[in-house]
Image (cartoon, rainbow over all chains, first blue to last red; front, side, top):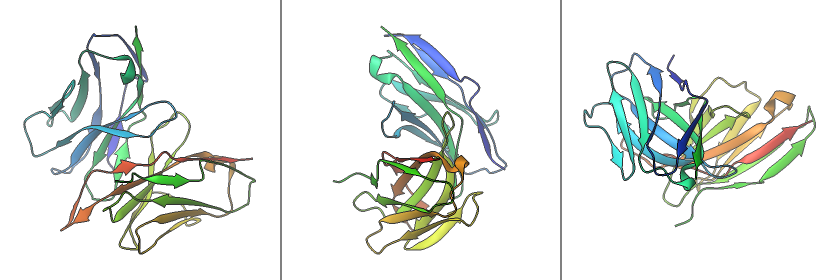
Length: 113
Length: 115
């Protein structure tokens, strides 16, 4: 069964600095998608970035980028120039079948002013 | 464009009761997925509906059931509530065309407390 592991329950970063959140996953599939979602306190889950497994190039969305290592089954999220509004729970998610999204347990990111 | 909405926002039920949660999908989306998010954990997939049919199910017992309506809105029904059913229930909608499913957009969730 596919599993997603986020080994950092909590992370902290100084405003304007860079932080990297880790995620590993286990799968025997070759074609799949990986996602990072952000869940601010008491607010909706928002898609931050997605990566298709068949693409070698790492996805980038403004200050957010990923380091996708397919052989190592690793998918980390880098947040550059951290802002106070980045404080949230971050979930790594995996999907192969169209309907089955698997989430990690989450990393709580705190941004210090 | 209207986003994903869910009702009610909060709900308190007693063990053994039944509950119905509702979700309206984002305009243009024909697929709805439901997730259970226990406190301090990541969401767990319950099931997905596509064109009014169940299109996949996670590891949840049959007392969790659902419906999708012609306008693509959806309901999640839970019978014989247990204390462990206390959680945030998330609905997500997405497009689905030609075998491809696109990004899921989440609603704000319904917080269910079972006492």
